[in-house]
Image (cartoon, rainbow, N blue to C red):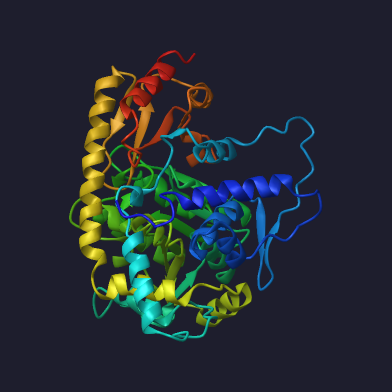
Length: 464
């Protein structure tokens, strides 16, 4: 397995260091943290590793980025009047990153096969090639070579094409989604999402004060199209967030004819389509049509991240959008992303040399092998406790208990056994999946995964 030369999970060590640093800091508003480079030198890791750890903390609301000034500890809110118990999501995050825990809740495909070592090797070669900086250190929209590589990869035909100046790269997925909602003036509006939906997407919409309408997916990966159309008629929906290939975390695939019909309805109402391409390359069979193949190109935004297929050394998020170029440039300039040009050039080389393609083929093969292994364990240990939806891509199973089970209680029981699960309620804001959970198969398989599944079955069996 390709890993950085520091430690297999260097960002986790940096994350824990920062958590302890924040906890030990004096109680004062927004205390400044070390810069990315200072922390990298202090801990002996790469700048991108420290950036990834900072991004995790920013995503959790512990710190805040001040453009051109750095990172600051976020002022702690006043404690709630009745309870200061962390949210379920905060608990799942914290415990999943605690040493000694079996994180059945994780969703990190590149854990099985990363490109981090090749990426760092290319970066070293580029550093030797460019004895001086190959480009200005401040590229607010992203490295031109990487933007061009992405535009080329997403171009499919003379009708469906992209240019480099329609691609924007940010420090992480959280940041580019935040900018997207601001650039298109969507804060405070209404969004329609597939459900179950990524908790990261839900939280970003919530932070923008967007009212979310959830459309549940059936076991076949389809919406009730009549209900979908009715929602579009009755609600002032301004954007829809939908998965490009495999519906995550559901693991199913929307039929092409349904995608075409949905895109027609969205276009008729000038509704923005945000296509989530985070798992677009991780569909297990021949690539199916995406929403973007049918969407109105003037109301289309595609977003993704390199992290899922390359690894933690490539945490950058990116988006593609044809419209409102001036507004994108204004916001990206104001945000002031300072991303390593060499690291971005190295990622670009993975694409321009086509090295990414055999890697993706091998990664999908690893995911399928581990998915089948986990499926066999679930079949052997389930004994009628759960319904298994075999995923068509991605890195997780979506399980449903065959009887009403409080998955939060199961979560609490398993924590005592050093196991972390992701209850279904994390993937809905409307309580749609109380008896479900997301289960990862991108794990450290040197551990006793079978024993963890037996304990999961035991917790569900004895849950009231």
